Amino acid sequence: MSATYRYITTFFFLLFLSSLAQAEVMISDAWVRATAPGQKVGAAYMTLQSPQAVKLFYAETKSADEVEIHSMTMTNGIMKMRKLDDLALQPNKPEKLAPGGFHLMLFGLKAPLKAGDKVTLKLCFKDEKDQVTHQEVTLPIKEAY
Ligand SMILES: [Cu+2]
Image (tube, rainbow, N blue to C red; front, top):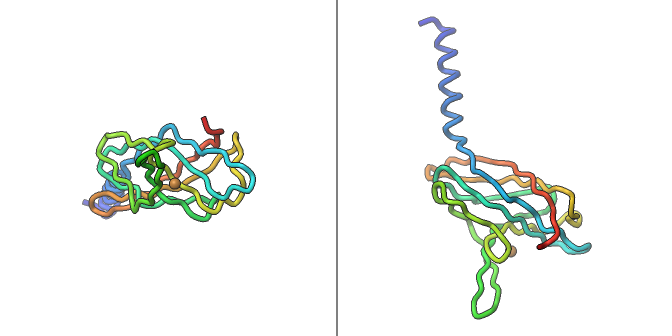
């Protein structure tokens, strides 16, 4: 086997490995709620579906200082929000982030989120072997409905 041939096969093997590691999470119905002027907090929603078990453990955006993963539950008629360390996705089971439930909370907005504009989020997932993948998603800003 020539050195060139070996080099090429190694290259394609590595390419194959990296494609295995990057099994993408499907992101659909993604949107960000428009905010009023002066409002410093926003919320992002989307449906996540992963081919393998992963955890969403970190998110960031240039539009805000910090992004937190939140759950929302109703207890005795009172809405309670809680910060989560991560959000686990079961293989092929869609996890819905929607008003009244899971959401991404944007703290320290740099500017009001205006309907018609867009926000780009970077989402970081970790698989069961602690392998981290990043995905960018661009969300339209919409009025609450
Ligand atoms: Cu929240």
